[in-house]
Amino acid sequence: SFRCGLPNYYTLAEISRNGDEEPPCQACLKHQGRCHNNSATRRPVLIQVRMHGGDVGQRCWCSAVFERWMKWQPEEQAWNSYINLELRYKEVERARTIYERFVLAHPAVKNWIKYARFEERHASVAHARKVYERAVEFFGEEHMDQHLYVAFAKFEENQKELERVRVIYRYALDRISKQEAQELLKNYIIFEKKFGDQRVVEDSIERKCRFQ
Figure: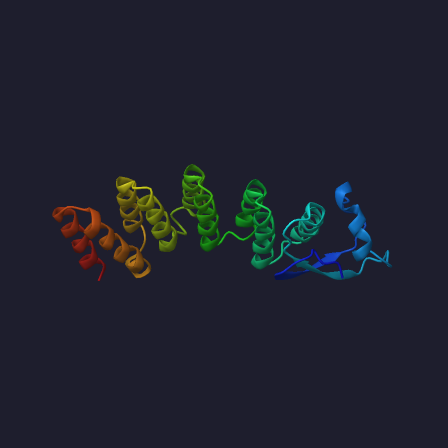
């Protein structure tokens, strides 16, 4: 099997030899023989994808392998491994593009949050905020999830945008049922005790009483 070199295994990728895929870039063609050695059949093969620290050609070939795999809409771990590969090479823009596809293929709240935190880690506050806002719009009021709003509020708290935090908490508390918003309310009260005045704290405690 072909191995993209390297210290840490991340996944096993089953890649089909369909013969109708675009070839990898010229810099990587020399590696094809290691994987496509003796067969022109269409049976799947297992390719072990590992991280590598320096060979651009191997990174490019690994990316080509992942791209073919992504067309099959694989499980979440496959997407995470692809993102980690690009980040290993500090290809932040490529990782961002993969995240865009990932949250559409697997639109769970935790994946939107992971995408936003990726943007925050890479010093892109505006991009991170936009991801949170898009997630709120994506799920709408019919599928609101307290964990999304807690993460969004904590992000804004990290940016010292306290009024934004308050708006996020109150917007969500007004729309999510009390059975599904206990964690949200708990974090809101903690926030107000840290940053709110006495009147606001009393108001938040009153909200808690209404929820119980």
